[in-house]
Image 1: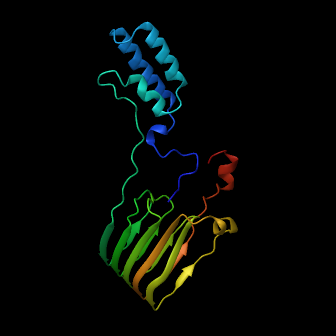
Image 2 (image 1 turned 180 degrees about the vertical axis):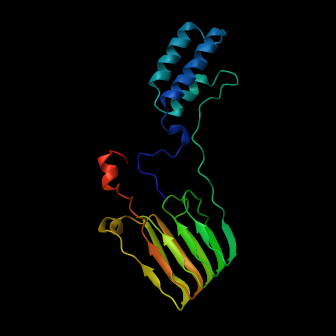
Image 3 (image 1 turned 45 degrees about the vertical axis):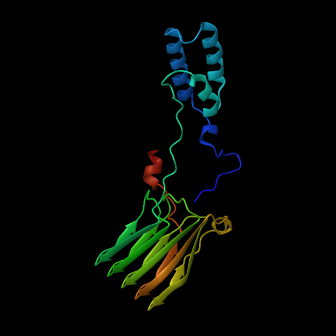
Length: 212
């Protein structure tokens, strides 16, 4: 989970406006002047303020008195995760990878398969994620980038172990922004915690050809 930096505004209206936003508002103002809603002096004044605007809050008053023109585009809301997600697999694997929304609590029962939770590109909105697993004959594999910490002390393991693969010194020194607390029971399997794979370097021939 990423925490806001000191310069990130908490109010969406305080976020920065784009060139497209300013152009859109200026078009609305010109149409309003053509309809007789604004005088030429008002149009000139508002256009000057429009092109000098830095935030959505600067743009909003310029069209607030124009009917049906609540045109200041606000940033999309942060997605809200589910409180609990429950899933069950028999003879198959459970994989959560790519751009997935991490729930507050994930309860997984898998028999004869593995569970892979890749947090590399996941959307994490809570500081703590609970993962409760019931595994037989399979492994729990957690792929965690820097800033993510795994606590597997509460999981009961029979016939297996918890393996943390080391990362670089920079990753180990990164501040913890997200904790993954693992509980449950694993029989005949392991908990494996690994960092994301580094991007593959292009081969010699591809480098000679100038391709990525």
